[in-house]
Length: 354
Image: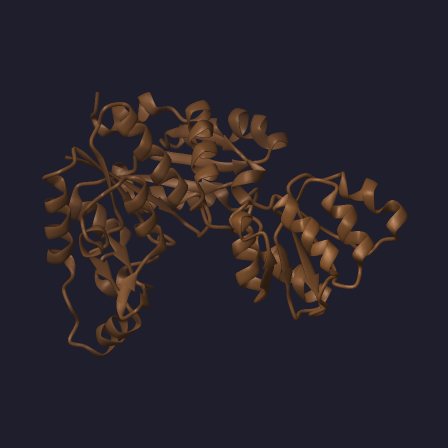
């Protein structure tokens, strides 16, 4: 069995997206590909059992029947982390190896998702380097575009993994920077012995939070259009202008959230005449009934929050570029980007696969 260990130096780098995208392509190319997250040292507990959103999402996408304990064998809940700190310490390596070998009976290649950084796992005695060595996996580094630290992060991975590192993927590169990365950064990395399997451009859709995510972050009440609660929001605008200029202003951005007070009926109606994913009404001001009726007709969710506009803006800004990957639209779009920018032939060669 072959094993690809996808790692990164930071959160929201595109690691989960790459695991799903590569796994789906492996299956499309005729391989029986599976998924595993070897170590999670910050595991949630829901209804008394460990839970990991990435693992459960991958399990659904790949239609894997194995239980959570096999797909994420080392899941440190707060209680287990406390036990590890107080002692006696648990040796988790045998449990990980057992789960890995069990999956190997059903799949010819596993895509392993690393932790949130290159520093995670030490508390469980399973650093990224130790996981790679224990499982005989090939590490692939995902580096999010960062003008200042990206190259250093990639070279840190090379220092950590040594010759076992098969290369890197540079993700989320803005269009104006693509030529610079291809012509300058990639040759530099290659001179230092680091293969670059792809330079993937930034795509607004992939950074877009869903209406549901915004509602949860704002602590907002959903007033209508429940069927469109999971639509993606690519932009947001604040409706604080006069009614006469609102329509032209809102036409500037598609698939947006519009933030305004619940007493600004004119602004809400203007926003609903353009490409709007949701209305965010601040100050806990309930809108007029005909606004809700119109929004429901157009399937535009209306979110009511007690927050003031400035507080709502700050929360919403935090969701862009830090949104989760678990939406079918994002899977489809990222997979198409990988088909365009990622060198699968080179990856297969590095893994020793036909």
